[in-house]
Length: 309
Ligand code: CP
Ligand code: NVA
Image (cartoon, rainbow, N blue to C red; front, top):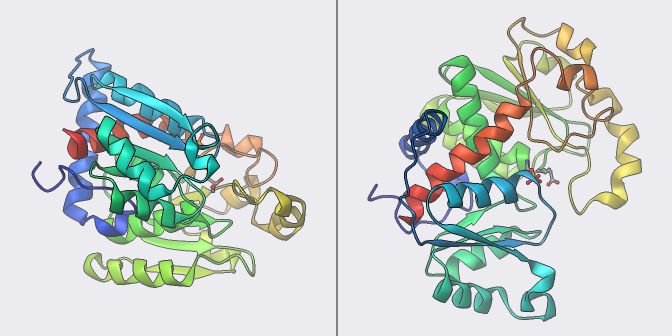
């Protein structure tokens, strides 16, 4: 575990395919152990500070339950209740939290806040979602795909919707693990060009093809169709405008009927049912969305055990 101890996770770009495989293998083991009723406490007595600038259901509960199951405790810190909200800097917050806690998980608007926390903290910092990336979600998604499909190589994932934080982290996850990934987006909502180029660079090693297009037919041969909300947290003002622009990109029965019979449908949740995905698809036979949600727990427990013990 030498190469993990003390490291932060801002994004999957910073981790090698072998390191991601180690995390996924431990996540699988922790999942099997938990289902068999075996408990391990590698983080006994450790404290995780959990800083939230945005709301959360899955991230908060999976990290808090996860650290508890590993023997430690999580502290929920709403950014508005901290001195952060009154102008204390991220750097000073990182230094102070490091004196009390053994790790910091943060959900932020600006990705720079994650980078600053990691720079000034002397404990591991885990990105629990920024406007740019959502690496913990991608780890749980990779775990889910491996469980359902057995391996990554040869698969194609089509992400249909906004080229956002979730799309970016999926591009990196696919690039690292050798899965093709196409982001199918409405005009004007492509993934960030720098993230796309970086993921394509990562993909050179694995041979995966990472691309973006507005052409919906690109989703047709995919093994996995993934979607996320059309307006992310912080973009509430654009919600109405986006509804119309994104409508053709809805993941619905018609889109699924043109896909492979063993298609997996994925969504990080929360779903805006009737917008980016219909009830019939999210509740249908191809959907693995609640397995993804469950795997947040196991993947993050593996991550915390590796980084913080
Ligand atoms: N998928 C995800 O991160 O969900 P929450 O916003 O509920 O944490
Ligand atoms: N893209 C979404 C993901 C929520 C888990 C958002 O940032 O709001």
